[in-house]
Image (cartoon, rainbow, N blue to C red):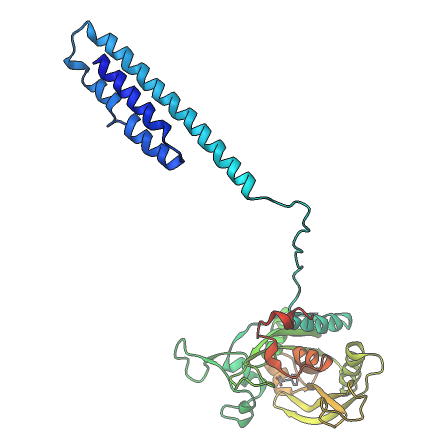
Length: 352
Ligand code: PHE
């Protein structure tokens, strides 16, 4: 038995000299030190030995086991050191090279444009009011004085939501921010129904229209709506406020003009143009030679809408306007394709 132990030790140590990798060393450990190895086999054969032999063989077997374990640790250290030296000499790091620049992130141009408009309106006393993206037909159209089946609805083809059968009041993605007018008025009026407070708010948000995507129209875009309700608010207030807005937005010399228009929820209605800031009004491709750029829709809040909002139209009056801040950005930067906004082309986004 003692002879056998000597051979086990000699054989194992001999094999260890030819081990040259961490993987090979693991193989060696399994073969020579695991439960099924020869040394461990000696321990399980002890029962067959005489009482006198047992301690002697046991001691010797333990010595061999410890020797092999020690040899394993030593070899492991050597192999690790070798691996470290190889990686140190092959993977040279040049600490004198300049680092890679981290590019700072930035706001999306559509976000910049909506914040600019909201900032100006805030300076003018319009508090931001956020309404919902998913609306009912009732709020998006009916409360705004669009009668059912009225052809004016076709100005704004809608994404209807097929969630449940809601008869003639289906859910849809808002086609404009105007339904927020009625929601806000109702909330303000609820505070004091007999004597509702005046309102001066800006309603920003995404709008959605079921349209062919082209250079000039997208299926989703931002709008910012303005609403002012109070006693004795006149059409003169509307004109003065919007002309002031244009000067703050496009420069102190910005000239504006109002053209009669039609919206079911305002009466009278007007669109506001600003003198083309590309050609100074002389006529160019951006203004299609008209000298003017269309900027927003506006009008005096219709009595029906006023009533739907909880305000008595014989006591209160007000004006509303709605604009597309992305369109203003396009005009300011002479962008010729609206699809750049959601195109996610980093070369476009980095310019802002
Ligand atoms: N909601 C109208 C649109 O989407 C714009 C508008 C808002 C017009 C408020 C008048 C008053 O075109």
